[in-house]
View (tube, rainbow, N blue to C red):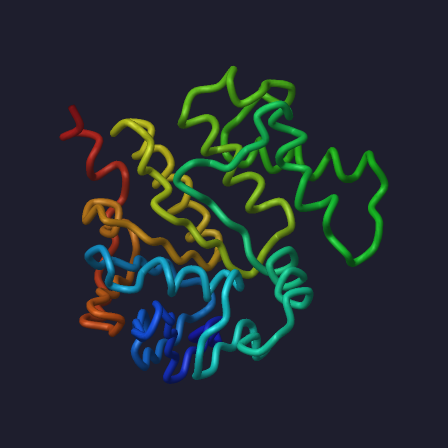
Length: 245
């Protein structure tokens, strides 16, 4: 049985005003993403990838069209409402990790829980949730380490744990291996794929065709429009290990 659509986009446009010139970053995009899908978004610079990701992440609103996330129309929500949706329903993984430099791994993962607005959790439960999130991405005995004391791959694991800690409906990953070497990047893709097999919905922006191959579905953007939408059998990290340098 197919999962219901988690993301429903209908005729979405995004227009930026640059002086007297209108720039159409998104031009009538329609897209459904089912719960449990792993979708990769690709396209050249200026294709609309970042604009689409910002709208999917409720960091921006479309100029026209509809965006429904988990059945809620978020297209015209206020900034406060969008902030609530981001905290409750979306986990973000960025290329640059976006960790607090002076905070420990545990403290970084705790941040979304602290800002959660659905009731206060006892401190012990908060810490346990954050600790378990770190364990789920393979970080053992790193709770008290600061970002400067960890490798890039470990920092990205912390970022993924932070994205998971509130059990979001959607994980958005923006070039998640962009700052990593090949081996660390492969480990991060394995984590994302494992999360997908556990039923998580993941949307990932990537310029790397190898990373896109881990997703079961790839859309290509060009000039603000969907130029291709293909399902395929996703590869596994083990498929590449033998050929990795």
